[in-house]
Length: 415
Ligand code: PMP
Image (cartoon, rainbow, N blue to C red; front, side, top):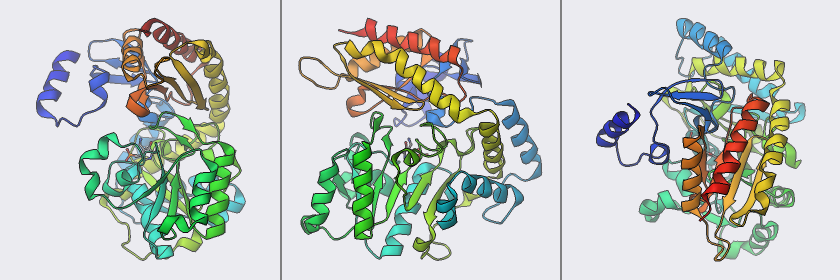
C-alpha cells in the first residue's frame, strides 16, 4: 500500500518533493515517538515533522485541548482572543525578565519562512538600510528573501540570479565578519541586520562556537546593526534551553520562532523583537493565517506540559545519552564528526582519502536505518550528515534502541 500511494503521489504531485525520495513510506498514524505506515510497519520517528512534534505524535492532552478549541474558535485573523492572549503570555514567560520587558511579539503567518521575512523587513524599516548579512551553510526557508538569505545553495541555484543581494560570511570564523565590518565591508554599506542560526540545522547540525556567536553579537552591537537569531529549529527546547541563544550568553535583537511552538504540529510562527525596532506601521506584515487559535491553545498547553514534566531536563539527559551512545562512531574512518546540542544531533560522513562529503554513504545509512525501523533525516553539504530530531519527551529506552540502530547502520554501510 505504501508503494501504491508513493506511485500516485509521484504521478500527481510536483517534482519538488523531498522526504519520500529517501524515505519511501506512506504514513498512516503516529503515537508518541512512533509512526505506523499504511502497511502496518512501525518506525521510531526521529524526524518528528522536521522537529515540529516536540511532544511526539498525538499527545493526549494536546489532542483534547485542540479538539476543545476547534469547537470554540478555530481562526481569529489578528483579532484579540483569549487563546492568543494566553499564548503570547506563555511565550513571553519563557524569556528572562530583563529581556521580556524589552521585547514585543508579532505573529507572522504559518511558517518559519514567513517569520524570517518579517524579521528582515522589521530591521530594514527600523534602520532604513537595505543589505543583510548571513552565513554560509545557513538555512532560513523557501520564500524568496528567506531563500536568498540561505547559504545552502542547492535549491536556490535555478533562481539565484533573480534574488535580492545578501552578503555571506563564513560560519564559525570569529574574525571574518569583524574584519569586513571594520574595513567598511569592502565597499558594502552598513547592513540592516545580521541573521544567524546558533546551531545550523539543515546545514548539517553545526553548533556556533561560543567565541564566534559572542563576537558577532559584540560587533553588531558596536555598529548598531540588529542581530536576528533564527531559532525556528533550535527554539522551543530543542537544544536543552528554551532558546539556544541562552547558552551563548548573548541577547539578540530579534528572535525568530516557529516549528515546535504549538508542540502539536499546528502551523504558527512569530518574531520577538526589541521594542526600539518597532518602527513599522499597520499592514507591514500581514497574512490570513496569523490567527490559528488551535496552535495558540496547543502552544499554551505544550508549555504547561513541558514545565510539569521537566521536558527540558529530559532533553539534556537524553542528549547526553545520545552523545555517549554515538561516541563509538568517533573512531570510524568515514565519520568526520559527531556533534549536537540537546536533542539535535548529526553524524558527518566523509571519504577518508579525499575528505569529500560522503552523501551516498549517508543515504545508505538512512535506508539501512529505515529497514531496521528508524526514520532519520539527512542534511549538510551533499546531504552527508545523518541527522536526528527526536520528540523532546522521548524515553531513554527509545533513544537506546534508536542509537543502536544508527550505530549499526553506520558501521555496516561503509564502502
Ligand atoms: N529557519 C530554519 C533554521 C529552519 O530550519 C527552517 C525549516 N527547516 C526554516 C527557517 C523555514 O521554516 P519553514 O519550513 O516553516 O518555512
